[in-house]
Length: 136
Image (tube, rainbow, N blue to C red):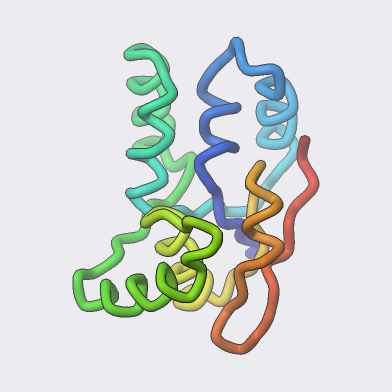
């Protein structure tokens, strides 16, 4: 099955009807038949930008299987800390470091993001790049 990693910007665009790229996020999901995966930190980050009702709808959509939310165990925190150190010049946050970790763990490199500048720089341990999925 085809899988994609989901970053904050995509979820914000999907969850906020007033967002200029909301229609593109909705259209992408309408035509995508694979599985979406992310980490809880991305949900937290996206929630910051959404209204109360939009947060509720996002959580209901996730609960209904819209996206699988993977747990980042505390045992992985040293790896995230190393990633944050490696990309300190990019001011990488916990959520992005967790997505790099998720890509490593899941072997999924394709990502839905609006943060192209950073995800073009981030690399997996193997040196491989993220595949930035065109959606907006």
